[in-house]
Image 1 (cartoon, rainbow, N blue to C red):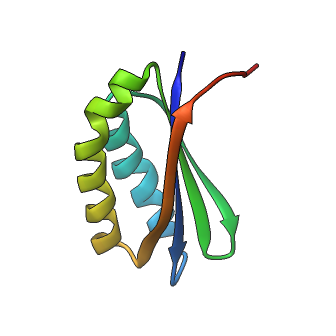
Image 2: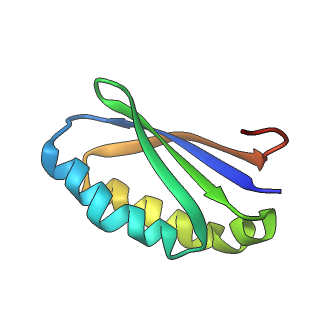
Amino acid sequence: MSYVTISLWNATEWSDEMEALAREKYVPLVMSMGASSVKMVQTGELSFAVITTYDSEETATAAQQRIAEIRAQAATEMPMKMESSMQGGVFASS
C-alpha cells in the first residue's frame, strides 16, 4: 500500500523563479529520496501544498530525516515557511 506525506506552506511572495527552483531542484531532490511522485499545488495566492507519494511506509519513513533537511533548506532559500505536515497510508485510490 502506498504512503503519502502532505506539507502545507505559506510564502511571503510568489515568482516564476521560485516555481522554477521548485521544479528544477526540489522535486528531483525529493524524488531521489525514494518518492514515486511529488506534486506541488498552489492552494492560494501565497500558499501551497506538497503532496509526496511513496510506494510504502517503510520507504517514506527511511526518507524522513533527509526530507526534513530538504524542507529546512527550501525555507532558507525561498521566502516561505512550512505551517504543518501530515502523513498516512493510502486506503483507497483510483
